[in-house]
Image (cartoon, rainbow, N blue to C red; front, side):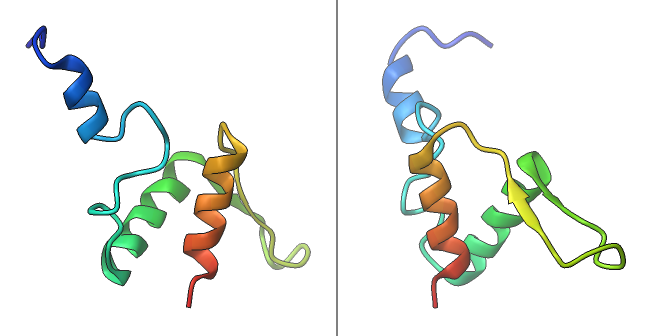
Length: 76
């Protein structure tokens, strides 16, 4: 399927032009947890706690997105 009309509007509505999703995607705790699980699967890693202390890491493209992820993880 090829989308020719309103391509920019569709990209904006789906938050595809930025890593930070629209508020409706992460507007409650359950949806935020689901979103963060997906982010972890896509770009996260954690070390083996038997070898050293826990270390959780996300490899993201921008500082703005890193701050967004940090805020979501440490909110509440």
